[in-house]
Image (cartoon, rainbow, N blue to C red; front, side, top):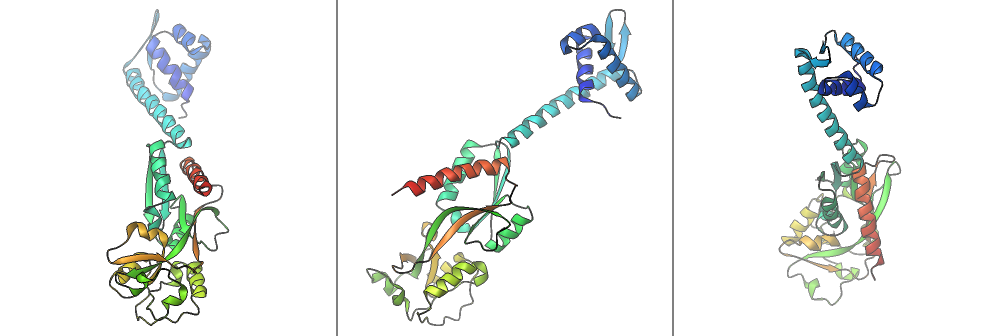
Length: 302
């Protein structure tokens, strides 16, 4: 059976008007064409929908059930169209983002999400924090809409949008003598224990820091390399050593940890948003528009 939407409209109009002529005027079609469509519909269904009266028609029992069902179908169709239109306009649906945990605490990403939620309350935002390698894998598997990462490598198959650049600071336990210096320089780190991280977590940052600190002799701390900054800072808080951390960590400083810049350390991290080429949902497009404005505002500041 292949019932057409126009046949449903025709049927509902006839049922409500109880007259082919009035229904034809309402639908703005010729009455013979309307009658023909109803004959075709009844033939396709295999049963009658109307009782023919001397002046008009009325629904039989099967027609009454059909009318109730068709009205429900029309309402569902209207809701489906409205939902689809809202999704197409970016005002409904879901925005799936993966990100490095530290970017969610302060800066352009939480600011952008606040604005997005205010403008598009009908869109659900799903956030997942995970290492860069896992983010890229999930993005390529279409399990997220965008990945927000630092210093991505080997992403020529993805669209990359630069957001901001973040400096690296020194994390120290409370009472560290370095805190008494008016300015900390790379040479001042000599002899201290440095809590490093696994290169796989951020290869570019690892290599940049290794190059910058190549002339510094650190004490061996015999601590297995942690996989993220949360673990690094937890070790710093226990006095296990120093750590080089993204500056955004100052917005959630753990107890027992202090931060300070290293004057001659010229290493930064580039925060970027990645998405699949040719695959930008209306919700993601709206979020990107918000980020673009925020980036422009920050770049315009002195």
